Image (cartoon, rainbow, N blue to C red; front, side):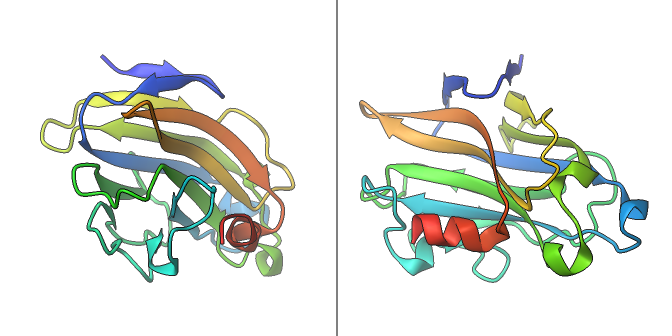
Amino acid sequence: MAINLQKGQREQLNAPKFMIGLGWDTNSTATGTSFDLDASVFMLGDNKKLIADEYFVFYNNTKSPDNAVEHTGDNRTGDGDGDDEQIKIDLTVIDPRVSEICVVITIHDAEARRQNFGQVRNSFIRVFNPDTNEQNLKYELDEDFSIETAVEFGRIYKRDGKWKFEAVGMGMRGGLQDFLNKYQ
């Protein structure tokens, strides 16, 4: 049975290999322009910075050098039910310098399209077993991010030799660039 998390809640991960599913719906009539939301992953060291540029995983760099994180592809419309984008995680092969994995969603070209997360609804991040599709954890963003164009949905971090997931739900106004500035 899946655990539904609240913002700030943490839960230990049961297995070292899992999938992260991310989903959302948009109000396409809000701006007259379609939305393109993108998932990105920042693999950080103890200093809360990328251990190397190649450990920033997104639609143009779909796999980390250690093969621990793989982005399965860019969904440019968000149409349909269920996950809009997915990320495979294998903590058994992760670079030992990595102590944290941050999962961020951004709105592509948000400023030019006059879009923000206030126009996005039913947003969630979930952790599930890819073999059985059994959902372990889920966090539904229920805040209204009316000025934010990027949101850190969750993070996976190592504490005392164990990996945990935290429901974050932190928005940024400057899109992906704000997170690049923060983590590079």
